[in-house]
Length: 95
Image (cartoon, rainbow, N blue to C red; front, side, top):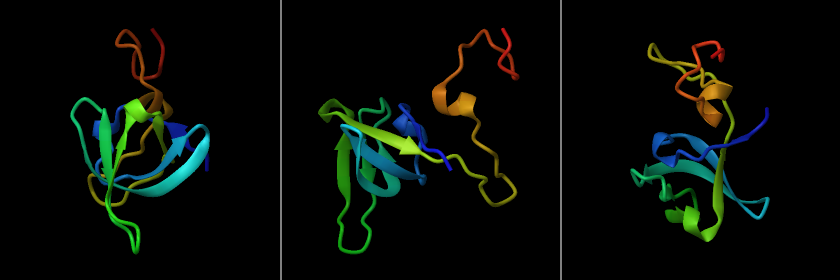
């Protein structure tokens, strides 16, 4: 599956993400917490790797892979949700 850059980090709590810098994958992990302004996220500890803060001001990017979630409240994240959509566009991406 293809990964997409996601700039609204505050909406990724609990998501599995790739952290990239200069096009290189630095780390993969679960978003444990995020700043409301999406300036930083905390990646949860995993095995020997501790909890880590990732800051956008340091040039880090967060990439996600869209996938079907489980459970009765599951939804599919669309490309429009990942990349954002102008408010004037309708549900099908037509203005």
